[in-house]
Amino acid sequence: MIAIPRPLRLTFYSLLIIAGAMLAAALATRHAERLALVDDAARANQQLMLYGNSLHTLIERYRALPAVLALDSEMISALKGPLDTASQDLLNRKLERINGAAQSSTLELMDRNGLAVAASNWNLPSSYVGHNYAFRPYFSQTLSQGTGRFYAVGVTTGIPGYFLSSAVVGENEQFLGAMVVKLEFPELEREWAQGNDLLLVSDARGIVFIANQPGWRYRALRPLSDSDHAELKATRQYDKKQLLPLDAEALQRFDENSHLMRVDGPDGKANYIWESLPLKAEGWTLHLLRKPQVAFEDQRNAGLAAAGSWLALVFLVLFLTQRWRLARLRQRSREELEQLVEERTRALRTAQDGLVQSAKLAALGQMSAALAHEINQPLTAQRMQLATLRLLLDHGRVDDAYQALTPLDDMLTRMAALTGHLKTFARKSPSGLRERLDLATVVDQSLHLLDARLRDEAIGTVLDLTRPAWVRGDAIRLEQVMINLLRNALDAMADKPRKRLEIRLHADQQLWRLTVSDSGGGIAEEHLNSVFDPFFTTKPVGDGLGLGLAVSYAIVHELGGRLSAGNQGDGAIFTLTLPIALETPELC
Image 1: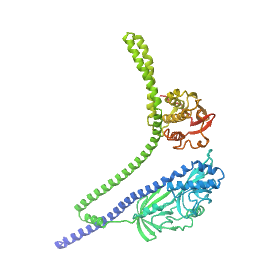
Image 2: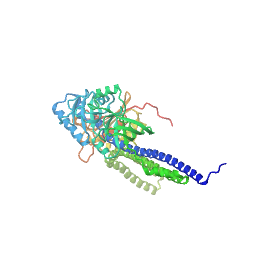
Image 3: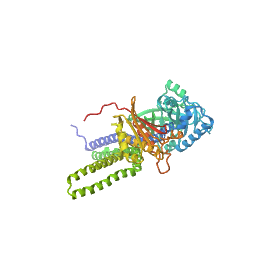
């Protein structure tokens, strides 16, 4: 064996160690670069979620506005017959006021042919009034589905916006027209432009229509087919806008909606971390483009860590610890965000249930005097009965004393039933409850609560109830509806010489029809269309907020029924209909 001189051997080992260190450092540097990109992509995805929530919140703020305005009686009346100039002017000004209060871009009312008959921009040169927009997809969607949505460049104003529409229907659910709100996003784009990231929103065809930097709007992220071009031309979605392709090449894939892309943009070619978030409710996709920032210090640390085993182990532990802390921080942020959304949702539901509960407690408060009298009268009788018992016991008449206990027990039973029913009625019940119950029993319980007032005011009551009347719903909330209807009837007959209350319950095909009529003089014709509006009341100040019938209408509507008002004879009549529950009761 040839002996290798020691200096040559040391040189060889040194070169081998140096080569291994350089190779390990190179591999570690490459690995660190990839990890930095993945981490940067994860942070970009979190930021994208926040931007997506802000856009979703902005749209949800106005989503219900056209549906609410479609229920307005003036809008419905305007679409039923010819609209004269004076009425059109009043309607234009009303839409202008509502648009200003809601801070939306534009409101317009369209007839069944797609012609705009009124709009909030009526006094501008770009007014929608008199223009026909039946070619817009949101109108055809509203005609077929009841609602519509479509983002497009305005053919009248030239300003892009998001159109949300809802059908306006008549008494027989016939289509009369559409109520449309237009949303524009200039403030959102300016807010997004303050950051360093590039934000784009594309439609289902991949066309960018919102961008926070100039030159990126109206770019096509994928090739458009002939059918796409034909439909764009027919709907005039991007009227007179030139759609340019945006060339992009995927360099690295992090997950399904996260890539490292080489993009040929308005400022030339550059690498971007490209994050995408589908907005399923709108059919859009939100994109965040961020230039990767790879820290040189991390690469140097990874290379030094790979130079020696012990140093590599130390840096590996530090790196894993740092990764664990970052993962825990991201998890905590997600949990806090989910908790915040859950709390906001719970608060909204609590507020909705609280309104129903407040109306119920208000009714109890207004009945408190009569209920106190109903309880106080048996208490006075019981005190006298107890005094009689003492005298009988003092004289040794035990048998007579036992007999005197019977009426005392009856009065206590009656008071216990009344207070128990009051406790049940005052209990807060959750919305959405669907239990099988007898509607006739609900009527009986409601009359029981108002029994004292019925006797004191000498009300002649006529009951014609079919038993049992099975429906599905919440007994407490249905009782709240009945008490509201009965109290309104009693209030209407307060100063009338003839006081007659009729309650009838009969089956009508697949519905139970419950009517409550009185002899209180009826409802003025001009008030019939407003009795179920919130805060509408004809009572003196202090006698009610006008929420009883509005809450009752909402409860019945939630249960799949209808509540209507009218006049009959010398009084008013309220009709409540609910679907018949056909199932047989469950046997315990």
